[in-house]
Image (tube, rainbow, N blue to C red; front, side, top):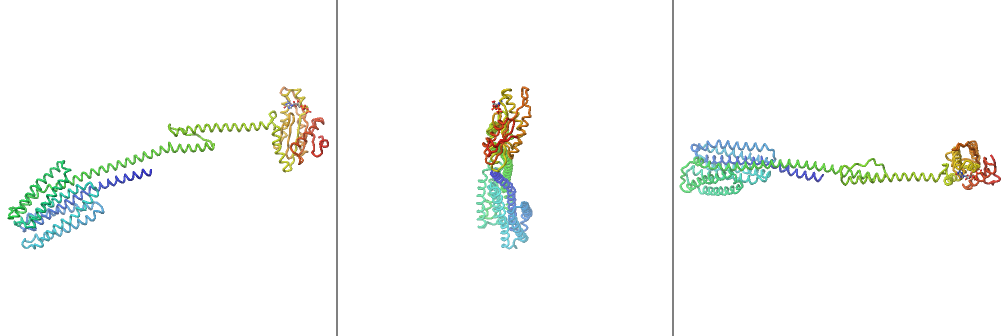
Length: 573
Ligand SMILES: Nc1nc2c(ncn2[C@@H]2O[C@H](COP(=O)(O)OP(=O)(O)OP(=O)(O)O)[C@@H](O)[C@H]2O)c(=O)[nH]1
């Protein structure tokens, strides 16, 4: 995005610069035109002033009549130029404006000098003062040249493509200037009706050569426009009238000036015949400027279109780019992020709410489908694991439980009993053990059937459960034999528990499925942990006590202290 914005910024900046330059070039070309017009007015005023200085007051009436409008035209041209320069707030124009002011000051001084000399009769005029005034007129024109040059440079800088046009316009202006100077060179001799001096002949010949060269250069430069009828007509007019008839006319006067000096024309008549022939030259200059302005405006319009198109395209491209990023984010980045989270959740076996439904048939949707399959497998695996764990629990319970009574079986008794026994031995705690055996159980089986016997065993187990505390272990030790391990219980308390159980069993009426009600009794062997016992020895002692109870007539409780031996330990409750 950064790269894109940088490139777009560069292109926009470049197009903006082109547009700005093309916009600046239009007033810059206009300024050049105004400067050339001003220069033309200056040249005309200079010509009239020169002519006036060569004549007496009464002879120079016509020149004097032309001077006032010429001065007004110069002043107007300067005012327009100044106004145009002031309207554009450019730092480059400040020195140009200063130079314009300098030219105007020089012009004012020249006018003052011309006026004071023209007011005198010709014979009273100091020739040196006249020469100075003529030089001042030349200086005023020369002082203006930097203005034209500077404004031309500014216009070319703004739009290099206007270089050729400005050059041609300047050349046309120079041609008009030289054409004027050619006539001015002859004016003094014509006024005096004398032959030309060598200096005047030399100057005229030089100017004539320059005019010819300039004309050729202009024609060469404007050959690109020769297909345009108006340009063609103007160039032909310059060729035929200005350089043809006009210069031929001056050449005729020049030939006379080389011999007799009898021109047969006044200077005003020369002006009246010559000047109209020159109008095609400033016309050409104006046409060139107009063409330049037309092209500059065309380029400016194009630059504006290109700039607007570039801005539009940049906005469009930016929109597409942002849209593309959004699509990539939505269709690629976000799904990948979601997929990553899903993978992490699956790996961590966490619950997955839902897998996003793919909207498009692409690689991402394939990935989501694969995750879905993975999720199904994972769920199946989790179910299987749960089932396996439940099965293990069930199997463990089954392996520890007597299938008939639901009590602990013999294996579980030894495993859990060892723990209780270990605690009692380590911490020297009380521990009693009761071994119970249903009396004449074989008779029950024989009389009521094995199934009834099972029922009786279950009911005896249920009765025994009621006497059991949470910490006690109750197990089916053998066929009709049950074992109770009682932590924190001494022998006396153990006997009491056995007695209660015995009484309960004796008092109980066992209702069998067939409707028969039977009564059974049970014999008990009770022992207590004496500190040196093992679980096996304790059970063995309980078994001995039970044996004793059986032998003693059953339905009784016997105990068997360890150190006193079997015979000595017999006691009947
Ligand atoms: N119904 C049933 N009978 C069993 C089960 N286990 C053992 N027996 C029976 O229990 C009877 C035990 O008989 P005996 O060892 O002679 O003992 P008794 O008949 O109770 O006589 P005394 O113990 O001397 O009072 C046998 O007939 C066994 O078949 C069992 O799970 N269910």
